Image (cartoon, rainbow, N blue to C red; front, side):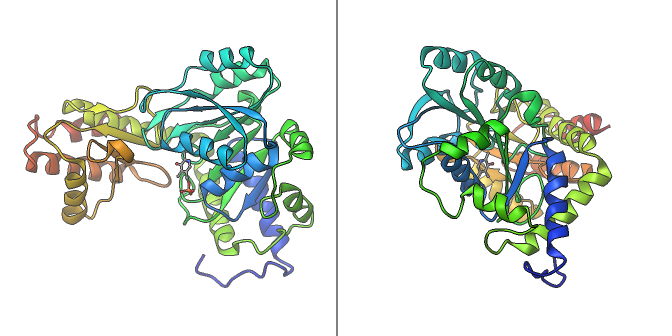
Length: 355
Ligand SMILES: *Cc1c(COP(=O)(O)O)cnc(C)c1O
């Protein structure tokens, strides 16, 4: 990324762009068409909505957290009617509830949900939701922004019509580049979708991609970074990347359980672990101490979970030693803050799980 800027109208760009577009398909995996947009994750969520839906459409938003709720905000902004299938933060939405709503209302055009809910660390069971949606006309649109690279999001096997991710999560890149896949059904829906759109109009991207270009200037530096990230994934093998996330998230879970703490999520994601803190420990102070004493940055609790939960991520290119480091730092800091537990048990549990 620190190399010279590749000229986006120059002779070398089409090969770079079409190469990353093809190789990015292996991350999900998907055989569907795939587009790179210059936006953050929320931008590609909006792109998914405006390209497949029309004002007045009815959709189901299945959510139990901050990022799932964003689907509702986007739909509201475009006059799309939302049927909420929601749950307490930390839970996962049961596919049977979605199936029930779809059966009750045949006019539902799409089901929008989140694979890994980053605010709570919970996984939604996309294969099960996909099965629930498969008997109906509705499209399945899945925010995979924090799950892609940590979990498979196999669009054909799970019945996903639109899948999304962003550069700054599992790909370990700076923010600003987003990925969207579109099934044939979703592409057909885009032909009739009436939401106003220009910058995110996928037909413009499709037309330019056929010439190896973008409809406007693409973030070429991020695309060079994506080339490097995809090469790292290719070298490790995507199945091993998923295994690594499972092993490392598993080690963090074992570590916190071993000292009497709980995961906030009923069904935890392998992208991150949200840790419920005991009453006596303030999460904001814990984060500050980790940062000041160890230079370690973890996530805080969002909204009403501020101070009550901390979120430890192993998303991207994290090493097993990084996991040992954060577990050790967490142990020492919790002990320093007066939390009582068997010292050394968290790091022992993590070590054992890492193998
Ligand atoms: C980070 C994230 C988003 C939002 O992405 P931005 O890049 O901040 O717009 C949306 N959904 C999930 C699941 C995320 O983890």
